[in-house]
Length: 387
Image (tube, rainbow, N blue to C red; front, side, top):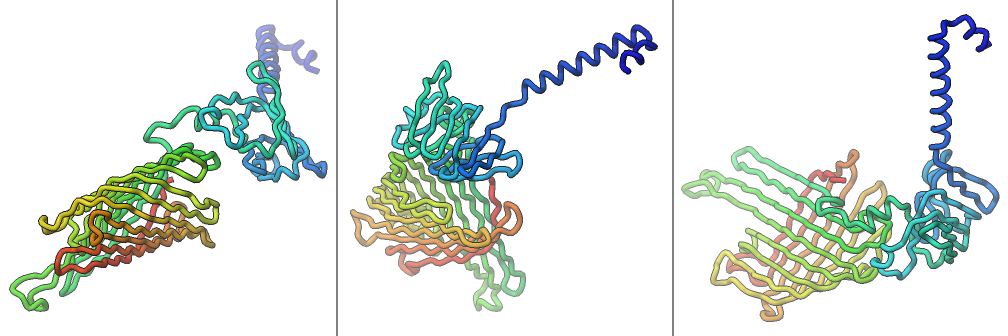
């Protein structure tokens, strides 16, 4: 029929039609050649899924199926999985410096073994799956392991804000604000942590004014609250759970006569456990502390330690509970010890927005005369997750 139709067309139009047909066939062949081959996952019961392998961590494989989406499959259910893309195979106990030299290549995974296919750069080898810690795609491997991100990349955290105002015979208000930042390298959460950087800032400020008619004085009387805390910590992991740390912290507490408390130290930390359900860290350091009081004659230069713990727990409905506690003895002045603790509950409201309830308790054994040793703050507000 095409021949009959073109017989009655002008020659110029015949040429155009022929060119379009050739171009269409060429593009179709090129698209067919460019389409990547699919990985095929064969289960032990004979079922199959086509798609792309994402990664393998521990005793399971993450597979992006064309039909079922991203799924996690235990190794014991996999008969065979052969990839067409290149993957880096990282083994248990191999130092990071040596792992960085791994050359990605296609792999084949079974229940018990992993085989690296031979390429011009990589010889074929078979590894027992029990020795494999992680199998990660070439792009992720190069971006997260062979190259460190810049200082401005990889940060996560949250910003919170709470306020209250009173306008009556007694008038005033308060504001609580804070920001928490964390950066873990590698930035991919399922890779073994090499280092971690945290930074926190918290400010609770309030003023309540009582007029002379109620205060019984010749002028307004103001009750002031000002509690500020800022800290930063760098952790360098020397094993999967143990790390060395450097820390710095600054505190101001109007309720405890602390003009500015400065702390600079270093020590060790231990991640006792870290699962999606909960995490517990224990830390100990040695530090120099400059304890600055409202009365400069009471200022102290202290050499002491910090013994602390931090616990995180995931609760139903995506709520998260975090708790911290620290004890700070001073070795050159046993009377100048202090302690602090916090409890925070975050409940999600909408997307990145959460409701938070926080209780803070701070204790100093040697405040200025007339000041109480203990300071307790309870705040509620909104938290916005940065990522």
